[in-house]
Every structure is written in structure tokens, then in C-alpha cells.
Amino acid sequence: MQEGFVIWLTGLSGSGKTTLAKEVERELRSRGMRYVQRLDGDVVRQDLTRDLGFSKEDRNENIHRVTFVAELLSRNGVPTTCAFISPYREARATARARCRNFIEVYVECPLDVLIERDPKGLYKKALAGEITGFTGIDDPYEPPENSEIIVHTDQETVEESTGKILTFLEESGLIPAVSEGLLSSRVSVAEGM
Image 1: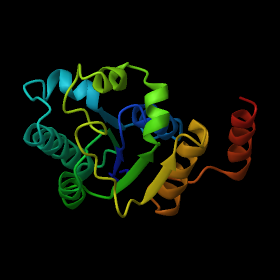
Image 2: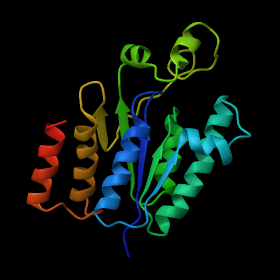
Image 3: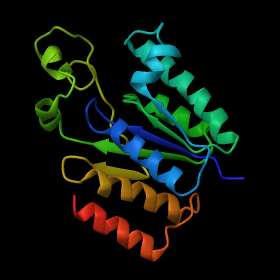
Image 4: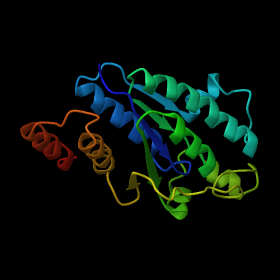
């Protein structure tokens, strides 16, 4: 039976959490891990937490519910990626305490880069006052103080950031290491992109 773990990606909107979660999930499946689950902020809010708003209490309740699901999955041997802004340290600490093999990944990207990227147009709306309580603009984001992994998506490619996560999982014995030949071919493909 495969070992359960939780990769918790936290960072501001647009930092690349979902992109990395999808890439990690794809890589885990390519290594033969059949049962892998991805929990994503946008998707979870459509079903599991659609009754919640964006107050601090509602954000904490959102993370509480996701933590419950991630805890069940990881306890039952399912590697799980969680891609959530999760702006408050206390809520992330609770998730860490409850989930088996919890790995926090800080998806760091400077605010000015995120405002420039703005794939959903949310920063523009927040800066114009059309959205209030937007994390990083008029609502706080408490950066992690002791993440297992920090990726810098303004400086690293998706492959480089994903590689950091996979290397950590390999070195922790949570996933099988890729054979040297396979790794070299993966790097060559990534470099050719």
C-alpha cells in the first residue's frame, strides 16, 4: 500500500499553486501511483464550501473542511495535493497537526509580479475597489515561517518548482525515486521547452 501524504501549496492568488498541484499529480501518476487526489480552492468552493464567503471566519472554515478531507485521504494512503491561498498561519498549523505526512509548500511570488500577471483580473478589480477583502491587497496574507519547501514562481520554471517538490518527496521516502536515465530524459525535455 502506498504511503499517504499531504502537499499543502499556499500562496497568493495567481502565484501558481494550481499549476504546480496539477504537475505534481501528473508526475505521481506517471510513477505508478494510482490513487492521487487534488483538492483545489476554486473547485472546492463550487461544492464543499459554496456556502462560505471570504471573511476570516469563513476562510478558516473553508480550510477546516478541506483539512478534514485531506486528513481522511492521507490517513487512508492517498497522496493529496491541496492548492489553497490559506492566508492564516493558525489554520495551516491545524492542517499540519491533523494530516499525515504534511508538507507545506510556500508558492512565493512578489505582489507586483502577481498584479502584472493577474490571469483572472482579480487584482485589477481589488485595486479599483470593486472587490473588498482580497488577500494581499486589503486582507492579510501571513507567509509561512517554516515551510518544508519554498518555490519562487517568478524565478523558476514550472519544471524547476515541481522538481523541488518531487525531490523532497523522494528524499523523504514518500515516493520512489526516478531512475537516473529517466530523470536525465525528463530534464532534457524540460530544457528543450
